[in-house]
Length: 333
Image (cartoon, rainbow, N blue to C red; front, side):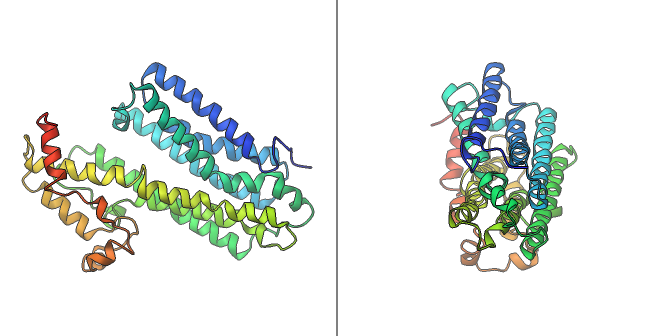
């Protein structure tokens, strides 16, 4: 059966329209009711919707299309379900405390979520679209099971396990009332990486892209279609940039450091070793790539801040950031 042609042969317009409609509906509900219960859920579930929608519209059901669509839907189901469960248990999401009541700031977050979902979904969107499916019907799509396909599945599988296990470990740590209050989580995957869940998510989308571009290796496919498949590399690249420089690591590193700094030097500094414990943890634990502490700790700082990407701007400076934190705590400017 032939794929359905909807608006354009790459399914770019229809996926953008569906994403905008779904996210703006979520925004309207969240803004009207002033709560955070569905914010992350709508993000994760949107990936599921796009994967299923483009697979059904593509209407070709080749093994590669089915496998990639299922992998995306598994990833989306897990992250949407986990984030929904987490916010239901905690009651709210502190990330939105400063913007929840500001219409345009809150709307800006949802617009950013639209950009994230649509961009990161590009490999599955283009693979399932007529730009590739029409050619696949003519025999231009190599059978699933190439070395590239196998590598992609392995990369995705490793990333999915790392992200899933890391999220569970961190959630249990935060829910454990007996966990030490003056010590960052330094067990499990978090003993090897300060952000293992982000590393796992990056691997997942590199795996998806690796599988999705297999048809582009066939010289009989027009150059424009091959370029579209290769161009979907913006998906894993966007994921990397977002987590490394946007809403990922930058929003976690300094705020966490500030909490431990104030535990020691703040008005209610009841934990004299909290700040030192945090410093020791960051010195011996890789910021992203999982590495044993015995290997990471002795590495030169210049190597950590370049090749291993523990950039200087992630660091909490006691003199400047610490002073500002104390002033904020005291109600100063």
